[in-house]
Length: 82
Image (cartoon, rainbow, N blue to C red; front, side):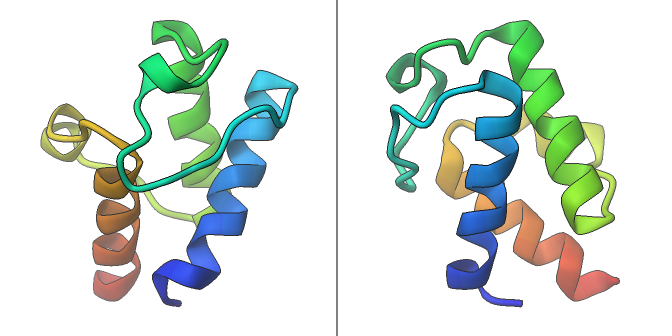
């Protein structure tokens, strides 16, 4: 699965948790750019992404994610090692 196939599923996870679609997911998108993306919803988004892709992020990977691009890179890496 490539990044272009991953992005719509990640957006679904965000929409499910945040209950709105008033944002664009770019590699540079951060929590500051999306209404409702706060610490609690962040963990809910991560959990939803893990479910959608049947993966489990490592703690170090989570700590190194600064934006959506980092999230996408980590998903690609996890799917590649499955």
